[in-house]
Length: 276
Picture 1 (cartoon, rainbow, N blue to C red):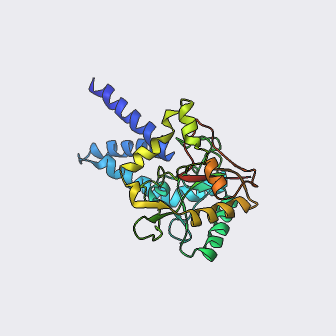
Picture 2 (cartoon, one colour):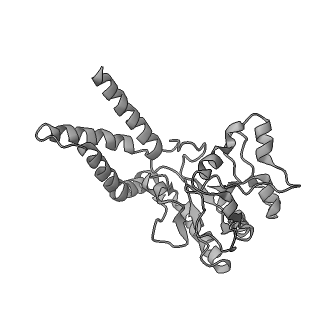
């Protein structure tokens, strides 16, 4: 039975790594092969994990970006090169989830530069975008991040005690810290839950493990300005935020700003932006 469990374990690793990184499953299989070749000569404990980490890192940094550009017209979003456009968490980049069409990168850089003119230091902090290869390849758990034209951008927050703007979203992964509807505003999340979509708030449960929302307040000024710049940019098409934020920021004239369907994740913790 041990060989069966071993095969099953490696199959699960392959599936999991493929789902979250696209290329991780293939690198895992290569690591198993190299490990087997070396172990025949000299047993070394933990060698396959060493092979995997080294091969995955080298492939992600040096091989994936040029191949993605030449075969799929996708570029990796900047990690350290642009202080105005950065990942909310470097894990998104390391997992190859931050590739976009060059046109989307150009538009984001333009909006990021415009943000600096009014709010110096308020960078655009992005999260999930797209995988590097294959149009239509799903980026779970998202429904539309599959052709290089979509990206999630986090909102801005302030320290509740001092009022000092936070550099990044306090949530460890950038999702789940809700800018909830105020009294008198339409609570779309509540509406969806009443329709039976109880799971749309799971991001908030995960975020609560890493931050206490009471310590932060929603930065409406910076977030509202970012939404206006994005909505006015001619390169962007569909933009997803909750209806109460569209109303609060005075963006009713933009028909491309719409709520997500109830079966999707909430969008009062981030904005989903797509190219036209």
